[in-house]
Amino acid sequence: MNITIVPKQDSGISRRLQISVPTETVASYEDQAAKKYASQARLPGFRPGKAPASMVRKRFAEQIRQEAIELVINEAFKEAVEREGLKLATQPHVHDVKAEPGQPLEFELHCELRPELALNTVTGFSVTRRDSVVTDELIDAQIERLREQKADWAPIEDKPAPGDMVTVMLSTADDDGTMPDGREYRVVLGGGQAIAAIEELIMEAKPGETVERSVRWPDDFPEEKQRGVSKNARVTLNDVKRKSLPALDDAFAREIGDFDTVDALRAAVRTDMSEHGRRDADAELRAQLIDKIVEANPFEVPNSWVRQLIDGYMQMYGVPDAEKARFVDEFRPMAERQVRRDLIVDSLAERESLTASSADVDTRIEEMAKTRNVDPGQVYAQLQKAGRLQEIEREITEDRVFAWLLEHNSL
Image (cartoon, rainbow, N blue to C red; front, side, top):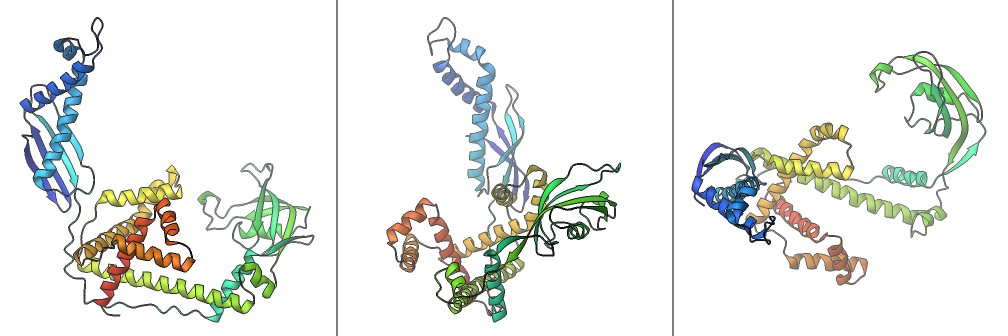
């Protein structure tokens, strides 16, 4: 296609190009669109595709013109991208289209490019691995959490205490002093689910009793207009349940899993926590390396990639519309960091020939199958069905890249 390209901006990974398409080229595309309409048009008194071309062009002039313009713009931007040698990060945006009949078609093309990473400095760094020692105290705390998960809640008839679960009907006075009907709440006292003054009021009652008095809202209450306000609150305590933890014995160990004794359970918890600690330490070490590489080799990241990542997380977390703007602001630094990390890994993998092959993926699957004592084909089929084969390939590539970086930097 014969087009004229005039660069208007060349800044970092952003490009703005002014594109002009000659009048005769636009006319040729109009002819193509007119022929298409002529072959399909249905006009009264004529069989489909048999109406005179002049009549078709007159009847569908606006549609023919619009289709021709869209085709011209599409072909012109492809030609501009190819001629300028642009490596696009995302689909370009078309702006300021001028398409007057009998005049050249003009528009501005806004492009965002894939960054080209030089990464001249990726060695000579010093990083530190955090020690991840699993102490007996940490194991005790984890086992207590397991006991909490298996706790029983039994009803009591006494006044509740911190740690008890209560069901209450709660109402607070309106601004004019009237007391509306109460709403039912289930609260674990001491868990921060209710303000301290309301919890104190709840603990004054026995099941079936109603208590009412003035309560002061805290000065740091989330709703600003309620801060420091005192008003009547009425609580009817419906029931109280107290938690009972299971005994820490061999029967508990067997209930948790395939453990014959508490000692076997503790050993498994130690192994699991050690593995988690090792993974966390590895992640922190990798983050240090990425931070040092970014600092030594600053580069822009495509905003479209950052936004795509943010949009994906918003969809995954089901962020409501009212919270999306705040989520974008808070999550953007994390998303930019993730995009930079991925670009560095991809660049080094390509430069140092560290990208995982299909054979590497097969080997990893065989290892997974051996660990599970199942057929490798079964594992492969499961991963393929779940769409996780690419994830396995990515894990292998990242492991290789960071292993290479650790070889060329000092701990």
